[in-house]
Image 1 (cartoon, rainbow, N blue to C red):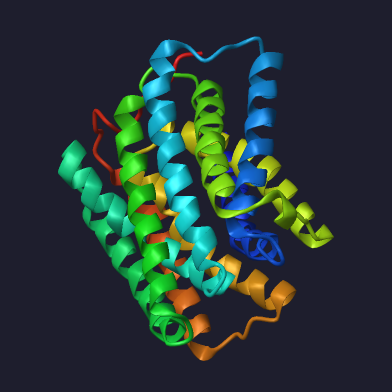
Image 2 (image 1 turned 180 degrees about the vertical axis):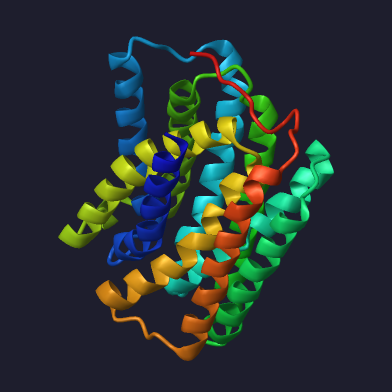
Length: 294
């Protein structure tokens, strides 16, 4: 089940940067965000209702952490998407494993074995090859905004490892989406007026896709994987998605494929293989597997 969830989340996160890029075409970025998370929150609460569950008081700290971090990081990403390509956003988010490793070492006292370190080095080498080429094509402000989002996401992932102990993934996700929707709606109200609320068809489809698959399904799988794996293991998804997102950007959005992209992709995939081979030799950790309540 973990492998299936892992693959589905890779697919979802590979298509998310392109969907974000399409969702802000002709729409204020804060309005696209508020629309996405407003719909996602409604669906998340509906799923919780249909499953005859509620959000217990003990789940709100985790939901608040997830909701606030998601709102802040997504504001950075959506704003950056106005000037940064979807492929570059995906590449920059591939830096999450490095940031997560730092936060895991700082807050959880986790260490990495030699195989994981080698895998990280290969993955980061591939990302660096792509990063150097792409950086010169985008504004510095947009790149910095995405990097801030990366740090927020990595810190929240590690923090949730302790806050989400004993909690239901559905409850945490529904609460997080509701909090994010409220925060983003406030920002949207401050930035836009009702006269500007006009959704092109492509933007509406992209927002709906992001709400249903990117937020409700994607974040539910994300929180479930966090409970089952080390934070660094979950964050390695971000090493795979840059390559696949860049290829999708080329196929669906006419983004250029260069020699640097091919070389970087090869390094990233090789790093993933090394990481998978290193897993059976990992020593048990008290933080390796944390169970949510049912």
